[in-house]
Image (cartoon, rainbow, N blue to C red; front, side, top):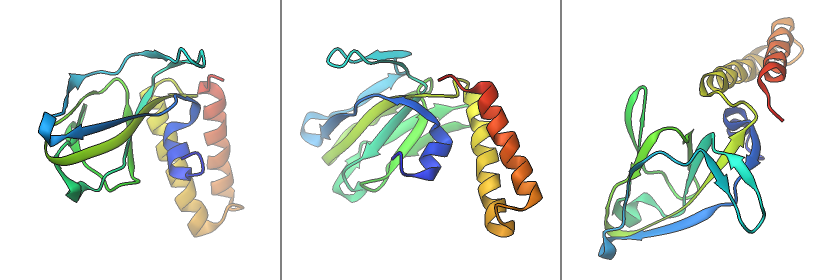
Length: 166
């Protein structure tokens, strides 16, 4: 994950909580009801304590291997159902209401964990992501040495400098 530029741009991770795993099976009607993730997570084995800014679900089973088991996330733009191919992940604010629908066939296997971002505020993190994405697109078209690309890159880093908690 930390080698993926898009993940790094969206999360700007400071600390990542050790991953947990779940396997929801149809025979047991496994699901997880609507909730908001805890604000702080601690690991008694390592002593790690982090503020949970972002939640991550990494899908480990192919969507055609099970029915149901959608991750449903509510945000200011509505309700989103997520069911991705094995190896894909979704990153979303830990403050979002979310749930996993009942599995009705097969088994849903996933890893889930949380991270603390260097940028605490969701809105600021979103603006940083949009700016970084625009800079990357501009750099592809005009090059990294283009004066506008350099100027926007400076703005990006200065905003990180203003908002980062390290």
